[in-house]
Length: 281
Image (cartoon, rainbow, N blue to C red; front, side):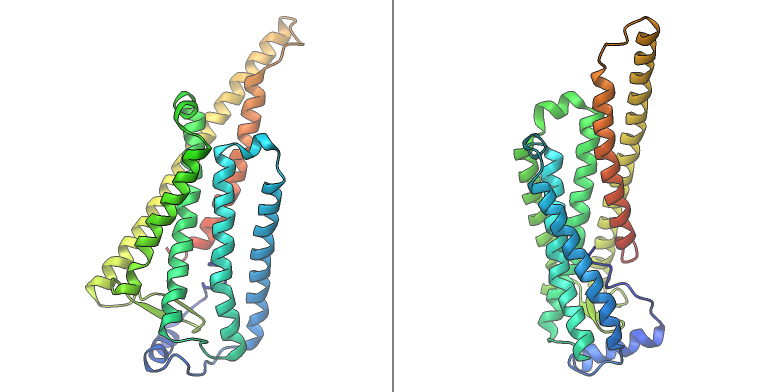
């Protein structure tokens, strides 16, 4: 995830030193270890290669899988995370290599916007995937009537536009962007005493926390429903076997197994994403 290379331990003195540097001159030399570039470069490589592999696997998937709403959302999440990694990690690596911020305040604004936009867009898509699974499992009739691939594409477009407008606001004065320890990345100034800056920080944090809450609740609901479906299907199979109908097929059991596979994929992605996102939230 794009936040992997950004979140590091801080101290009060380090915060003040970095903030003073960002105010007095963004090109001042930094006291950071250039050897740490190996860690950043490794995470960048893993992020890019991992997302590229995911995109390739999705592209060569079976045709019937490509027609599903879930497939469209997974593709959107992989592309979003790939773009976020490519927009942020190279700046961090360049800062480690040159021992100074490679750009001025405009680059700081761009970096912070990238963190905000791709972070919230990724969380929004993941939340949308959880809602999609919830509707598919718990409200199958409504899902079959109104949810399709075209709607998923429109939803992705809406997610990008909403987060674009929301996350670009600090670059126009609603909130402020500063560099954070060890001086290799920019984000919201959550230590600001400005009412406007503090308000935006709380709004962004609240929005992110809301997405996390909805995602977790939907996944829990889907988990309970799938377990119940599987138990009922196995009970019907055992009852039929006792009655001598061993050759009978039970599509409900097969369907629940397929749904369970998608659910565990969603749970795994949720855990990884939240581990990377919660520190900043």
